[in-house]
Length: 173
Image (tube, rainbow, N blue to C red):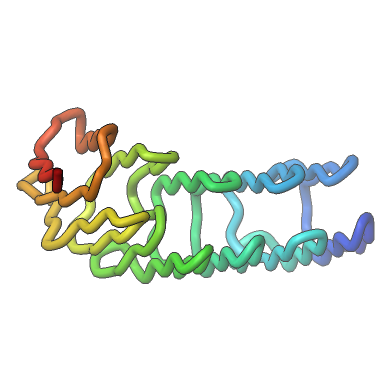
């Protein structure tokens, strides 16, 4: 049982961890870069970390809010989720809710990885994406099915789903 305060970091009831300049064991945090790995209950805010046990947690960083996750990694303008069960994320108008039905706005996701102008889906069902005039409507991924993509004056855009590429691109010239 102990409590540590370092750069507004407060730990309460934690067993394993090591803190150096904005760095902890069960997860690593760097400037505009958050990495979580196998943790379950704590709250994180920019320049303010609050841990409470190791099972439940909530993260708020640059308008990012995670609630009830288990395995995931987050970086600035780059979100990677891996094995998540229930969570909600709000980051620059991004809202995720659960892993089956959700709406995505501006760049983001659930069981898939998204990078600038690059989306990778992996086992998703229903969702809608709108990002810089990108409109993905009626996209159903269930071990891959099919989906439709409408781009407006865009050239590079690639989607990979389960190592298979199923997509239709419509350009307005």
